[in-house]
Length: 196
Image (cartoon, rainbow, N blue to C red):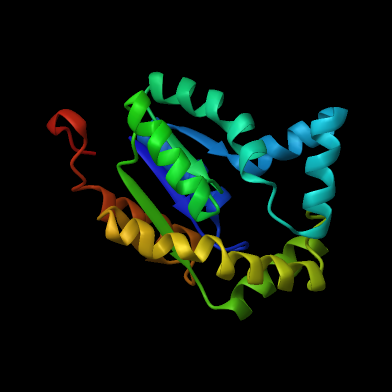
């Protein structure tokens, strides 16, 4: 199974990605975690990533592709992947689709988790109060949600047009979101005629 999780900050991509990985056996690949690990590793690339993340800006496409491509290719060869937080822009999506087509690892579905902005903001502020990430501050949260709407939000019609978008209401308890996703994916046709 090859899935993409598409969602604004605070919608639960990480939680749902881990649950879907446990359910399906595919590898959960969190783009943000990989980028943060690269940032912690230091060096010129790590410093560039740190600067973008501290501002709440998206890391440039080529850097993201360079960090993620080898991990995604390896996961696809081992039974599948669940991408969390990538692609985030239309150029990333089209570049990833072209690369995936060449490598024979195209997406089966793009899961779009959506929730009202007030809910997302509250969740992120709650996470910050519990020792969350450095970018969980009110001004940065507003900026991140705006960046999502202006960039990643454009992927919703892109994946809808490709016929692989599965929209799920994330403004419900995590267990309900998980059940909703699993129910929606249960009938999904996979390569070779297999089903989940």
